[in-house]
Length: 249
Image (cartoon, rainbow, N blue to C red; front, side, top):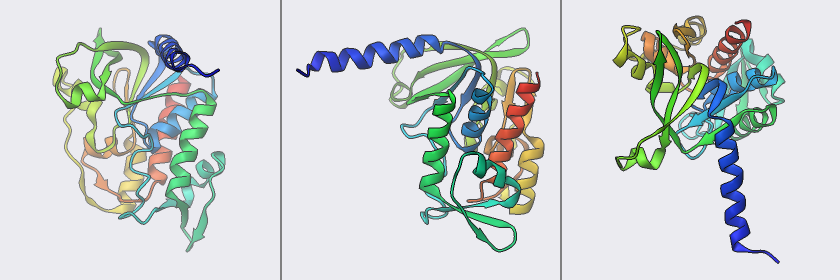
C-alpha cells in the first residue's frame, strides 16, 4: 500500500544524504549552463567529485530558447567533437556551422552530466565564497527563494578545491571575489561580434584568482569581450579548456 509518509520520508532522507555528502567536493560549479555542464561532465568522467549549483529551477542556462525562441542553436565545426562526445544530433549548415535542436541539446547535456557523476543542486543560490590565505576554498549557499524574498536566513558552506564561475552574463562569483579582493574588475560585455567573441571567450577562460576559474559568458562579462548570441561552440570549448586545466593540476 502506498503511504504519504513514505513519499515524504523518501524525499527528505535521500536528498539530505546527498547534500551532506556534497558539502565537500573537488569542484563546485556555479551555474548549470553549457560551459558548466561540459566542464562538470569532463571532470566527473575522470573521477572528480563535482557539484553544480544552479539558482534556477531548470538547468540548461540560455540554451532552451535558441535564438529569439526559434529553438535551434548554432555550433561551429571546431566544437563538433563535443556534440559527438555527448551524442547530440546536428545538421550541417554551410561550410562552418552545425545546427542542433535546443531542447535536445540542453536535456542531453544535463542527462549526460548527471550520468557521468555530476550532482546538480537546482534552486540553490551561491551568495558568497570562502576565501582563506588568498585562495577561494568554497561557496556559501542558500535556497533561491530565500534570496528572492530577502529573508534573513543564514547560509551554509560547501568546501571545494576549485570553484568555477559559469553564471553567464551575471559573472556572479567573480563579482563576489572582486568585492573582497583586488583580483579583478568586471568590465561588462561588449557589442555583438560573433567571430571575435567565440575565439576570445575560449582564450580568456581560466583561473582568474587562486582557486577560482571563469568560463563561458562569465569570461566575456569580466573581460569586456563581445557577445555572440545563439552560437554555443565557444561555451563548450571554454568549459572543456577549464576542465583540462583543473585536471592537469
